[in-house]
Amino acid sequence: MAGMCEGMAGMCEPIPPVFIAGKAPPAPCNRGLACQTAGLNKIGEISVLDRLLTTTKAALLINEAQIGICHPDHAMFKAMPLEAQKRGTMGNIAELDRAFRAAKLPVFHLPCVHRKDFADIKRNSLISAMSLKARGMSEGSPETAFMPGLEPEPEDHISTRSSGIFAFLGTDLDVRLRRLGVETIIATGVSTNLGIPGIAFTAVDMGYNVVIPEDCIAGSDPEVHRVIVEEQLRLVATITSKDEVLAALEKRHEAAAA
Image (cartoon, rainbow, N blue to C red; front, side, top):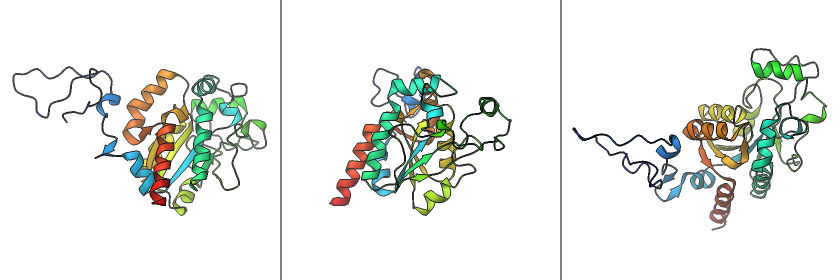
């Protein structure tokens, strides 16, 4: 495990392969998994991201990019859309959206749309109780519309969820991905608090590779976002950025043309 913190010089001491009797162990790293996983995103000289996007079929997933969830003026929870606005999350997703279409790779929109009578919501959690109280995101309501710049194109796929919290449960998402031969998903959208971890954990259990461009997701608070990304999502997904995904797509194009 020596060199585990390679590239993080000065942040913490490397962990020796064997603790020597009589010698005090190194001071514990206080940067959590961000430090402990440094250098683990490469196989030899090839990044995991490049390998996934050149050797497996990938799909872009855009979770709940809707007016009633992501627009600061219309969302039930105000903190998250304001944070997404500060981070430029929707604009970053839109860049990937266009790039995936240009690469002829599938784009999946994952909206939440409830029945008009809300019979599809069970009051078994705080968030479901709040949704019932708000009486929003129902069929035909303006808040279910997609955010400007992220409207589906004719070739895109839409997998709508009417109940529950996570995109894979109770929907046709898994079946449609498998029929297209997708092995790797690029998870974007909201929120870092619930929706994105739900997609990542479920997808990994189902056998998919998961990539999360960190600047294409948003949560309710910067520190909550950081902790979830560094201490949870990093364990199951390749954490990257919009620009790194775009670069990997370009390498994929070059490899296909060679």
